[in-house]
Image (cartoon, rainbow, N blue to C red; front, side):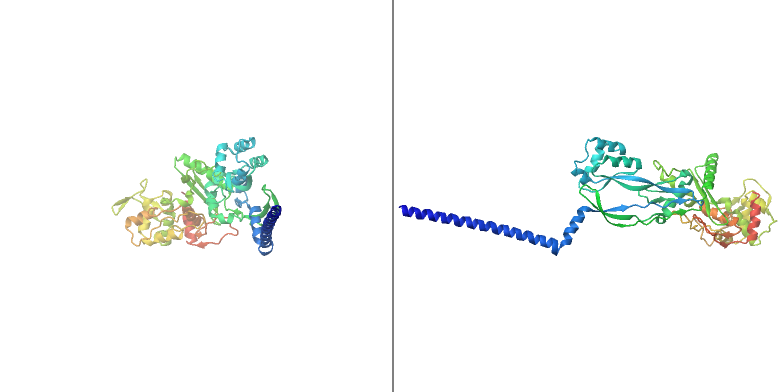
Length: 474
């Protein structure tokens, strides 16, 4: 019995030893497999495909920052600033980073931020929590640099500053319709700002940096320089612009008119020296400004020119030999196609000078009916009516000009005192600039012209001078 017991005991010990050694071998095998897998992964990442690890690391640490460039300055012909960019700040938040640091709280620093930006604390929290995994939202735009510096000193996690600029217009209402304005992103919306937007806009640069987990820049990787914007020098003279604007306002008020427009052109160069509208608006504060008030009536609004075309009628009649400079016209009222042609007061007869002095509809209509219907159509067109001025301003109208081949007598008669066509104030200014340069039509320009453009003759100099002398007596 004792021998059998001893044998059984030895067998149990051998079985136990065998089980332990098998378990140890399995453990060692697993460790070796894990180590082999780990070494294989390391070899894959470090030797065979190292770029993936670098790329993922860069995605977590590299940031591309935009380097803004200021919009070009707009100045008058003497270099006086009419539109400049002033430095301001944008306050933005990284919701994900902010959330990881506890989000918006009742901490005194958050209350200080709320007060500085005039945003209630609950609204601030709502904007951040709207997309807690987002990486960028604006909290405020075009913030005064002093406020920006104050926010920076608060050192709130996930709150950052971005440099930007805001447009400022020193002349305010005086040049509002001409210069226009930009939106909050610096894009031209009206006037010169819109028409010359590409010229005034530069290209922002880029700066690639590496940041640590706290958002601090620890390394500059690369950079692309920004392309500076172009400045723009206009033909406008700010002093004349202010004078024209003041007198226009006075005239509108005196005549109880709804609106008024004035354009001043240098007849020797074609440069626009002033262009004003009344009522105007403040481009530095557009709140509650109706869009209708913002349009530049000098280039958009059209109207029948009325008696302003009469000098061209007299020129055409002289050119075609219908009358002579000393001719006297019968200006007694008469009927055409059943319609009475008459003047404000009755005049039995008038000289050509008298026709212009008294703005006689009877006189010019008799001249028109003595000429072919194409005569005035041709003259008006030579002086630029019915054609855009190509000043380069967005929204310019070319007016309405008749294209008919057959004219009734009443249409010919009324065409001589400005009915049957529509023009813009700028087109009419071009007509009188051509008269003022004795028949030379120069292209109008809103930018400074140096040297002056020669232009082209559209009417005989002696005839234009003759009519100009008549006009001087008006």
